[in-house]
Image 1 (cartoon, rainbow, N blue to C red):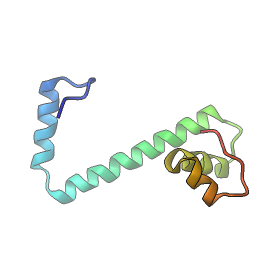
Image 2 (image 1 turned 90 degrees about the vertical axis):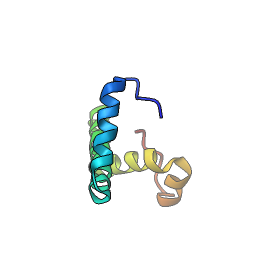
Image 3 (image 1 turned 90 degrees about the horizontal axis):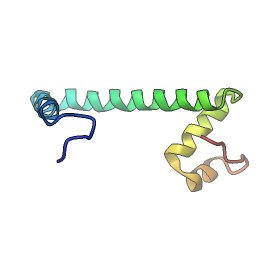
Amino acid sequence: MDAPLDTSPEANAVQIEAYRRMGGARRLQVVFDLNALARTLTLAGIRSRHPSYDEEQVKRAYARLVLGDDLYREVWPDHELVAP
C-alpha cells in the first residue's frame, strides 16, 4: 500500500507498525473513534455552510451525504433534498 500523500514514508511505516502492535479490540476502537471524528467534522461543516439549518435539516443533510439521494428519498419521501 502506498503512503498517503500528506505523510512521509517513514512516518507511515511507524504508524503501520503501531497499528500492528495493537490488539484487534484496540484497532476496532480506533476505527470507531475516527468514524465519530469524521461525523463530527462533517456535521460542523454542514452547520458552517448552512447556519440557518435547524438540527433536523443538519441531520438530513448528513444523511444525504452518507446515504446518497436515492436512499435519502426512501427515508424522507415527503421532504426535499437538503444541500449538504
